[in-house]
Amino acid sequence: AADGHKWLLGPEGAGLLYLRRANLERLRPLGVGWHSSLHAGDYSRREFALKPSAERYEGGSANLLGIAGLAASLELLSHLGPERLGERLLEVTDEACWRLTALGAAIVSSREPGRASGIVAFELPERDPLAVRKYCLEQRVVLSCRDGRLRISPHAYTNSDDLERLCDALETAP
Image (cartoon, rainbow, N blue to C red; front, side, top):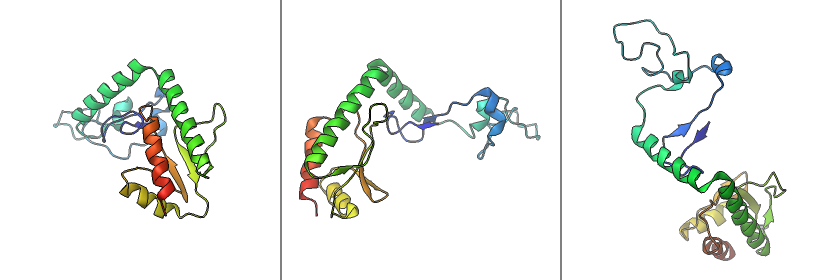
C-alpha cells in the first residue's frame, strides 16, 4: 500500500494497494460501502456479499479527481524512470548528509549502499529539535521532528540551493 501524495507527488486522498489474490481472505475490509458489494448498484438486493477481488476494499465512490492527478504523476515519474529518480535522490541525500555533517549534525539514518533512503534523520547535539523545527518552519524550510530527531525528506527535484537554505536555517536556529 502506498499513499500517493508524498514520494509519488500525487494529490491527497489517492493511493495504491497491491494484494495477491491468494491473500485476499486474510485481510478483513474495515470500511465497506456500495463498491465493496458483489451486487454494487443493485439496490433491490439486501444480502451482504463482498466482491471476490480487491475491489472489496473500495468502500464508496472513487476520488476521481485524485485518481486522475495520481495517474498524471505516475506517468511523469515513470517517464523519468525509477532508476534515474533513485540515483538522483541518493545524490541529493548524500549532499545533504555532507552539508549537515559539516554543521556538526550526527546523521542517524543508514547511508550504507543498499540501505540508504530518501529520508535523512539527524541530531544537532545540544539543541532542542522541536525548537529547531519551529524556527526552520518560520524560515519557510520544512522538516519534521520524529523520535527526538530532525528529519528531511527531499525529492529528486531538490537542488543545492534548497539544501543551502536548510543549512542556513539550521545554522541560525536556537
